[in-house]
Each structure stands twice: as C-alpha cells, then as structure tokens.
Picture 1 (tube, rainbow, N blue to C red):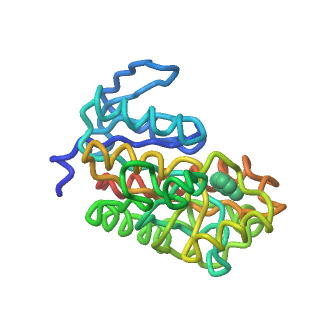
Picture 2 (picture 1 turned 90 degrees about the vertical axis):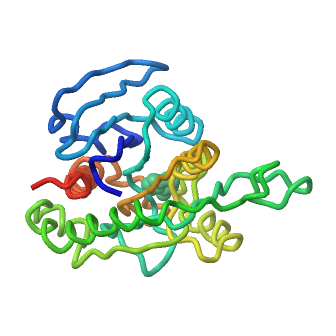
Length: 255
Ligand code: ADE
C-alpha cells in the first residue's frame, strides 16, 4: 500500500481532534451534506477527505457511509480519544484497535450478546497493513515528537512519563463511561478490553459491510471512571489534538 494509491477518509468526532490538519491541507474543496463538512484535498503526500462525525455510533456510521459512497474513499482512519479499560494503559498512551465491538449491542436471547444481528459477527477486525502503518506513525510520534509537541505543563498535569502504544480490543457504545462500576461491568463481558469510546465499532461495521480497509487510533484521555469528564475538553485541545496532528502527518509521509 503506497500513499499514492490511497484516497483516505479521516474521521474525528470533535473539532479539536482535527485541529491543524485542515490548515495543512492543500487544494481544498468543501462539500456540506447531512450537517457535516467534508473537506477534500492533499495532506502532505496523500489524497484525503477530513470530516468531523460528532459523537456517537449513528453519527460515525453515517459519516463513514458518506465517505465511502460519495467520496469513493479507498481507506478510512479514525483518530480520537478513548477511556482506558485496562490498568496497564495510562492517560497519554495510544491504542490502535485490532478488533472493535459494540458494547451496547444486546439482542439476546435472539442473538448472543454483542453480536450484530444477522451478521454472525460481534468483533470487527481492522486492516492489518493500515494499522501497522498507523502504528509506525504512532510509535515515531511518541519517541520523536512527543516531548516537543506537548507542553511541559500539560505533560506534568496529565502525568505523562513515557507514553506507550498498545494494540487490542476497543469497545464503542452510545455512552460516556464515567464510573468504575460501569467499566467493571463492561470488562466482565469483554475481559480483553483495552479502551472504550463512542464511534469506532460503528465505523468498523460500515467499513466491513462495504469492504473498505480501516484503522482506529485513540489517545487515552481518561480512566473511564468518576474523574473521566474532569479536564476532558482541555485534554483534547492541548494534548489529543497534537497527537492526532503529528500521527496523521507521519502517516501521510510528511517530510
Ligand atoms: N472517549 C473518551 N473517554 C471516554 C469514555 N470515558 N467513555 C466513552 N468514550 C470516551
């Protein structure tokens, strides 16, 4: 897979998560449909369409379907934030999904819990090559850009020492997880869960149905507990936005 061959859809849930990317785009054109602005152009070496989905599974699914049908994207990546669902994963770490599950899908007893009815599937696999390329970008960001990109005040505040990159299961649902008890409930059903968010598995289902390779990268913004909403928007603005910018820049083969 070369940059030249791909037409990449880049989705984030909220504006701050794409800050900087739109400004870096060249030859841009904007199309507004369904209350979303789809901005196409070149990002460094890559033909891209950037769009904000807003939060939640329906919003993410509608956005992904539009990217595929209207913009003919060949690949989709989603960059955003997530709550940690594993004690080994800290605020500031990156998680790249190997699989995604919709944790609020439960059509039992008609179908097993988590299974998407009439598909036989409960977990959607991400594209290995796209995820590997995203992992290189993420790892290089953490080892080469992180210190300079993130203000020392923010690094201190968010207790960053040396952030790490993880791979594994991400779960999505129409719920901001903000209690330890709720997180433990989710972990009981999904013991290998690494992170929770609100969009990835919806994008995953749409991409699966259309046969579009996709990858999901998340910066851990909180511990999905009672403190998860504290400083949430500040984290996105000061930290996650920089992560997303540099990871996508590296992904798109910037000089
Ligand atoms: N995105 C970031 N943190 C989250 C949380 N705690 N729950 C759901 N989505 C999130």
